[in-house]
Image 1 (tube, helix red, strand yellow):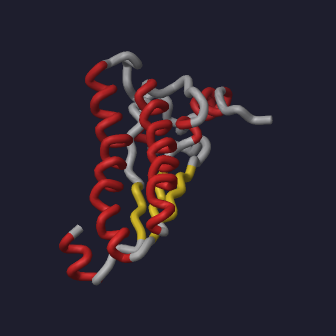
Image 2: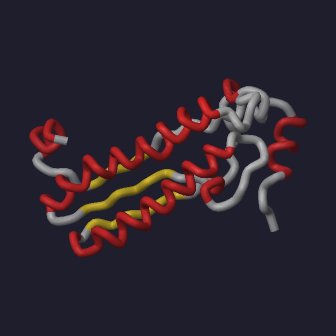
Length: 143
């Protein structure tokens, strides 16, 4: 943050937009996958917030936007449960930051995109085929 505030004089906003899904995981109960997914999706967001708060407070306020997922609100059939848990953690961290730092004029919001077509490298749940697409969208809570 010191380099950012030296270069730009202040920090107005933080966007935490990193995440991995593990949709290609063969074992949805893998402890290794749990640690890897939560490290990126939840702990990474925590560290982004932790580093940004002092500079944003010093600036007199600002905005934090955290990318979560619909999977942070509902369960998902085709991803490791760590994805759901980590995206739910992002949602609740955002709410915590909003409450803790409203007095500092820091706004915090999370965005929860729905099902999107994954990259072809996503593995067995990739929507590159009609069958894969139908399978992924079947679990979506439409209606």
